[in-house]
Length: 415
Image (spheres, rainbow, N blue to C red):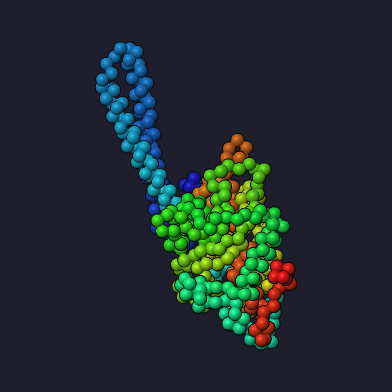
């Protein structure tokens, strides 16, 4: 959640940042009016409380001096009822403000470039040069047909569209990649965690998926439980409503999980193949840091994801997202896009975000900061999306006959 005190004290500056993120003027005006309503409700309550204190003092004086307290008592009793009503009015005003605040995205960092969508993102650098083929490279679904790696038809039969079945070498490759990613992340200081693949509503609200993106989640019928869209949710919420010691920071976690997404807004996009699925495997990095550390940890996480692709000999590029393309919770995001020769383009394979204290405010994750409690910064990123890595290996390591080689770094995992 955004810092509402900052928004209230620096309204023009804060709203300019939110406009950069795509928040409408109508929403900002609604927020402004809710601030006014809360301020007025609190002022009325405080005035009535002050009156109550004064009358209570006067009541004591009257009794001491033997004066008749009948009229004063009636006023005190009436003011007590008014206090209850005004307190409820202030509570409702605060609740209304909080409900709107829950669907307001995070402020973008000042260094985030202006822009409307992915076309305005800024390429930072390219790593490794794409291989030149002396034949027309095939796309991954064509290679799958030749090698029997991915069974799209049976995935649809078992569930519905946007599900698939990995078979034989592809299934072994998935397992190898998960092990490789986790092992590598551990060498960078990330603690491996095995997490539940179902989380409750409070956890998804803590990381920002709820309430705004409920339509994109798979909900368990009859329960306030959801299949996780990413292990960012349970990893970040390991310390939900906790106060950690500064000596524990940074807390670095990594986990494998299947990820479940309805892809509610993706109709007509990537309908063929395995690029966009309702279920996919991913290894995640999550960091909880002291605010002074978060930029350094962010750069480390970007470098780590890039290093994984370099070790796999997969050409990729590093891209800074513009304000209009930033995710809901992110203050800053670097995407890493892998080269797919079959598609003749770069496609996202990792997204690393610094969320600052946005999630920590929602999830109440704090650390002891001298004599007060402060919010940690949280960061998250893929290292890496497993299915898209399989696609990248298939397309980059293919030969003219349609055979697929395995990157050397994975040989021990495939033995």
